[in-house]
Image (cartoon, rainbow, N blue to C red):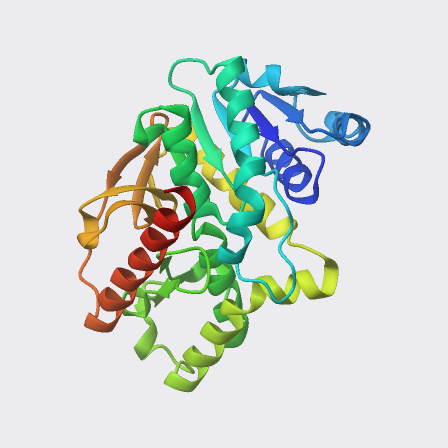
Length: 308
């Protein structure tokens, strides 16, 4: 599989490239960036370690590289300020993103290629990409709440002192202020969270609060997220490459699940080689359903206001 990363010179794009290199599953990694020296340096740095990782082709270039890609990852965008919500980014990022999409459309994409949006605000820009590129909806996805979900799992595991891979939780909705943790389905090692030793409402509320503020905290302390978002991107790409049909909370166009329509938002989504295979609907607590409906409303209003 050939994967291109637009914005491959930046922190998120380069961390995603390294995660894909370490994963050893994709065959080619093409890095694209407006800063040619930087992106060539990133490609060289990755290439220099290739004898210790995987037999892959790694190179840098312009947008023309996307025409041969099976998955086009878009990470380019303006960085969020410490006190700025992801939705506040929309007016600053939408024109830049339109230019990127125009370049992709000009170059063209191969049949069946998946466009994978990471740039923020990811749900709004995923919707924009779907409209601008004219691809089937199942071929355009956003990272959505994949990163939020792994943050929640990791921090809950730390508080309960259990292995992170044993924690199963899910965040749905917007990747941002209106995200919805689905505590009704949370488990640790297959055991219901509400019955797990040490778990209590106060601890759960503490972990949720920390998760909601974790993105801003990382930006404040180191300038931006890199490692966690990189492995999150690689996890989705590997699911596509291997046609794993795993359930991931990616953002994609909704057509009725949980009452959501004509908005790109995260719900439980079966992902495979063709992109979105199926949206799954589970029973939620009433307050979770209400919060998810509100999250969809927030995004729909933003799309109407900004994109028209």
